[in-house]
Length: 78
Image (cartoon, rainbow, N blue to C red; front, side, top):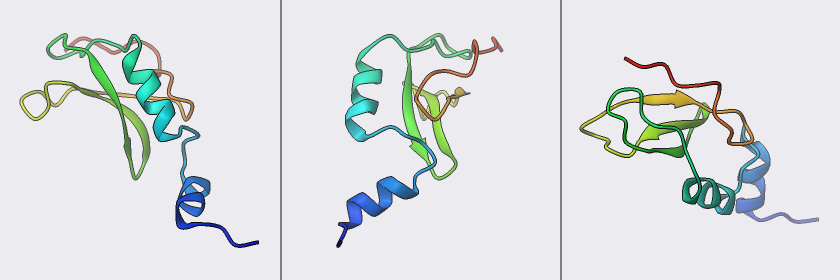
């Protein structure tokens, strides 16, 4: 069975969220940035999912996320 490059990349990801899942989560309620209180956006990095401040690059607030896109606890206030 031949698999497409997109299918292979999805299988190798550490998270279990598709691009559609990221969009759905970001359209809902997300945590507030601990630095500036703006909403945070679920993002993907080579290390997995995380929430990054919507005000990036002016604010570099981040918060961890589970592989299913849920926040890791409550963001600490700075």
